[in-house]
Length: 362
Image (cartoon, rainbow, N blue to C red; front, top):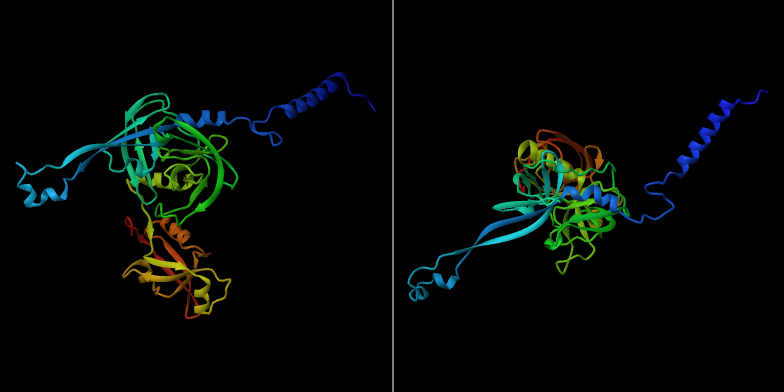
């Protein structure tokens, strides 16, 4: 057998050295070593997070007694209502060019003036593109060049335990970064917004963080910080953020229509509890929603659904939670058809409904 020549040995050694070099190249996040700093993630995300300052004129009414004719006799003229300027603050995230900023609706609601302060020190007024009170989101635009856009997370779903960084302007002290983990996902029935599917995090979130970025360990956007659970008004380790995919769906509608277009079924349901299963003679394993109200002449009414029906399937999937079904319907467009699996008087039936358009707070 012929021995390898000099060139062959050179190639072989080169491959070995290359493989060793690759093996020892420092990993950005080695599994066997703790991360010592999230500064690179902050460097990527922080320039795209802005501070928002708003002002609006609030009319102060005079004391009711001063409207009484008896007390009015003691004044030369009727007292006039006074006005004062009310200021508030929050945060926002630059999500696209040219200068599109996503924030919370409650940050800018009713504002006469909206001022945006960028990470590089520049300030400018912002224009409202559209708002959606039912998800507490608002889309703004600023006219400045060179505004960095945040990177979106490509992670399909967050896991409990994932690292989160909250970036915002708490109490107006300036841009601040706090760290935590994903404490839970899919939080709903909190009474914060109409459509709830929140990320829960223990990263410190305080007044002024609203509308700011929740990013992952790579500095990519995963959510918009929206609310906190607190008895004191400050951070108690329970913050809530709107997931990125839900926020982007709202953004798309605000850009196209100026408001969010949602499907509407005209059906009110409640969870199928164990006691209700016993009352209806249904098996304990059955999942579904009991119809407690049908809007006259609405889509569900026209499809033939009745009060007392038990909805078990929505477009072929189990209707386990009313809030999830409501959100799925809202994500469809008016005119879309849906199939509903229903138990009525012990018999399984199927109905097809054509969705209408949901009006705000409908």
